[in-house]
Length: 248
Image 1 (cartoon, rainbow, N blue to C red):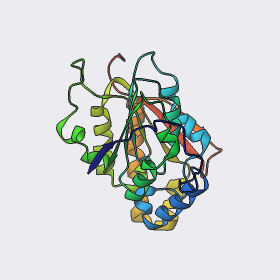
Image 2 (cartoon, rainbow, N blue to C red):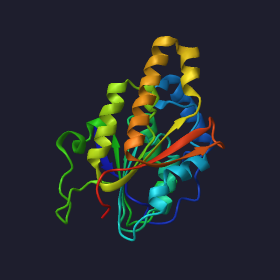
Image 3 (cartoon, helix red, strand yellow):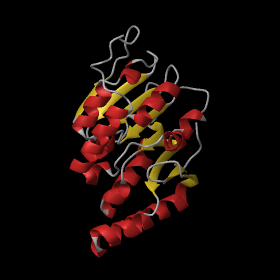
């Protein structure tokens, strides 16, 4: 695991960006390449579209008037990360977790992230969320002696590609990492159960349905609402959930 602070640019962005990755076409090509190479961990063939990104960052755009701490898991090429960097305010903290080393390299060299407000702290961990020190040792105390947990978690993990036991582990971890009353967003693509059975066979179809049932139970317990995003490829449903306890 590698964790590092990403420092903002001290001045304006360089005029010659030919060596910089494009946040649009270049990301789509990289995303497709990695999806074809490691579809189990990527879970899609293209980055999330603007409408889905907006649905996922709702807890940050409708937030309390104080600094917040945000965890993004499975950032990919950074479409959600860039949106978060634009809407976060001075004093906020963003911790990005991305296990794919090629995606992590893209995030390190992203011009939008480098140009964020200098008082927005950005940390990148190139690992799986289960490998974070917070995940194994529990959240450490913050400067006020609190739990040091996250106010918001935005998850881009492809849950239906995983085994049910791993999904259960990650969801339980999210609850431990969230502050009381903190909010979690994640999404799933529509119509995947039938497609998975037709393409992968009955065994993987049954595993997929087991994960969907697990997610439905989780959403019934902690869910605040959902939004269907038809203008995405493929169409998706974004879920908003809240951890138990009063929001500080």
